[in-house]
Amino acid sequence: MITGASSGIGRTLAYWYLNAGSKVALVGRDISELDAIGKNFPSQALVVQADLTIDMQMLDMKTAVAEKFGGVDILINCAGVIFAGCTETTFP
Image (cartoon, rainbow, N blue to C red; front, side):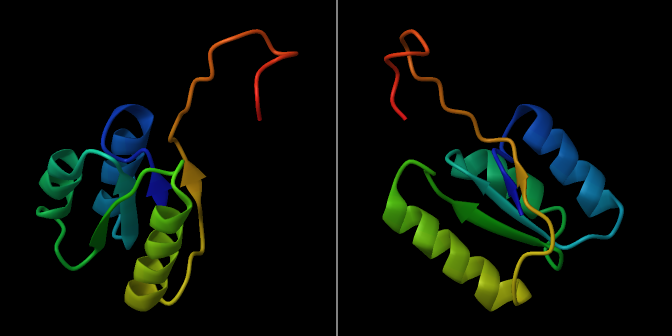
């Protein structure tokens, strides 16, 4: 499973793993970008639109991956969140 798979390092890793023959769950917020990757690898890719800051979407993501692939062997977390502020006062 690769989070942040719709752009940047996540997208590059998604193509690398898919071209190597791996089955990959592509997770991100930009469904059109994820679909563009997934359509080239229909038997290997699972496209999951999810915002990882929303708990229910994370649960849906987990369920979709478990149903399609039976579980996760490797998690590559390339999704990023930026919290503005100084380190001492920023939550979480």
